[in-house]
Length: 353
Image 1: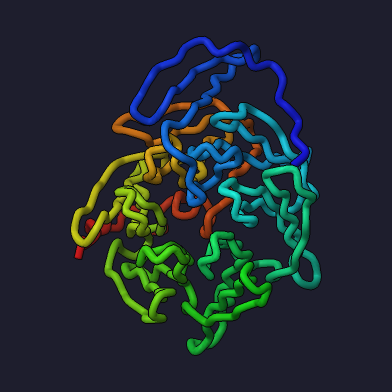
Image 2: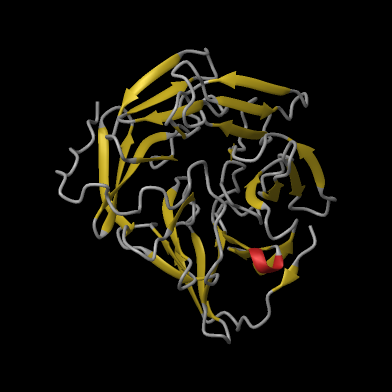
């Protein structure tokens, strides 16, 4: 991967030993605070947005004006990677199975969409076609071979008949075949994850107050009631058991409220993020390397990240106005607009069962 180092980062000024490793705080000559860290645990291939393979998610934004990813890597420090054209959509995944996240873009044209993947190592970029304009990119390891597959979710078009179904297209890395699965109806929001802990991503959608999951292990469809209509679904593993937990985000002016069900009945609730303009972009990662995933929000107006790694968020400056994060499924600002009926009663809390 051709990297360009970001100049102007001052010498590291302070180190603090912690249970998760040695963390450093530094300030660039431009006044931006940076974070780097050395993990105490082995890197995990399942760590999202982990370009340097240290088991910690890195801060990554896509900048359209130079068609580059700007990466603040937790071990390797800041660098940029130019891929594609300014209008291309950003995405990422571990497509070669080396335990490090590969950066990618999707170019939409009149025909099939073209993915360009830049391996995290020294390999040359490669391309593959999958999906079309309007599809939602959802790469993940659906076939369980240790490599993320190219995958998209094609929602049901507005005005389609009630019998229409959403379509998932998965380009399996194990045999390079494209699998097509109908799963979901109009209005469903895609939220795949490894809900059964078998090492393969399961297809899943949120429909009002219910998470519908097509399990990869036995092809059974299960319905889990969690949340309420209007919530935005999220997928994260807060307890580190290798299974995706049910989670939803709700706009509760002026903050966002997260509801996460860990296990069968344990529901955690916490406020994190802003639900009023200027809107923040949500993202999920393991920013402290403890083997669990936590939410983060990117404030593009100020170029600031807020990481929910504990009871108090960690604030890191990285990026600038106009930058975007690579969305996981739904629009990272979905659900942050004003309510259609400001006089409506607030929805009930999610049922943990």
